[in-house]
Amino acid sequence: MNRSVLITGGNRGIGRAITEAFLKAGDRVAVAHRGGDGLPGALDLRCDVTSTEQVDAAFTAAESAHGPVEILVSNAGITDSAPLAAMAEDQFGRVLDTNLTGAYRVAKRASRGMVRLRNGRMIFISSVLGTGGRRGAANYSASKAGLVGLARSIAREYAGYGITANLVTPGLVRTEMMEDMPEDMRRQLLDRTLLRRPAEPEEIADAVLWLADDRSRYVTGAEIHVDGGLSLGA
Ligand code: NDP
Image (cartoon, rainbow, N blue to C red; front, side, top):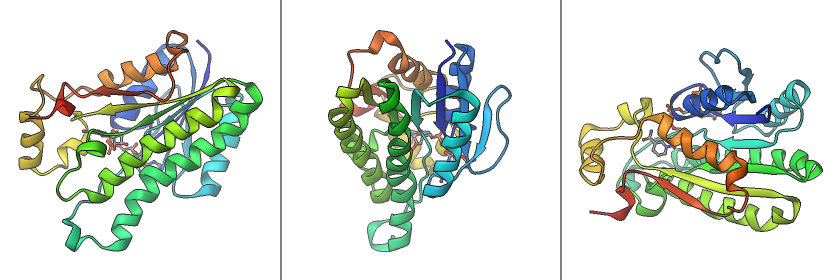
């Protein structure tokens, strides 16, 4: 479709599936990530979302290669779990800085071009843990809950500029992040998933592509759960 798209953390896992789906749709895709390999067909941008300067430079590079970013997918995320009593303040802060403040940095930078275009889609990847919480993941769960407020505030502030902001909220997804989870935690989440399997990253990408599409033009401030029923609870 030849749209200018920027995806944070688009080189691995869910982000990689989203990148491949936009490339397949014929879009111009820029991928912002810290390390590792890029993806053939996508503009590879080294960018740590915890740095305002690097975010700015990544957008400038994407804009000169592809034109103003019309679709932002804020997907970069990390975990660093520990029980609350053992969770160091910088451990709490690091996860917030990447998952939530990182999303604020890219959204703020993206808004400049989108306001000029009077058109834009912002899509944030949250998590069912944002509402349900999880033992040992106070930092991660708080960051994902924060994304809901961030996206909905953006939806309100920018509706008049033709910009929508929505969330896709996965349950368990088959990626490295899932592999790194302790076995008992993964088992517990799977046991509560009505469809009895993790999502494939492509199934999350399908929802993102729909939110970027003209067919979802009347959708803003929405949170779409793609979680196999996990958020319904046990
Ligand atoms: P992965 O660990 O497989 O990938 C994470 C991606 O984020 C990588 O591309 C990584 O790139 C990027 N990233 C991390 N930190 C930064 C940073 N500071 N700056 C730029 N990029 C960064 O995770 P998933 O694909 O599983 O997760 C993607 C999103 O989906 C995350 O937000 C996660 O919280 C969410 N999610 C995942 C679930 C799951 O079960 N897998 C469930 C619910 C939500 P690099 O390391 O190269 O910089």
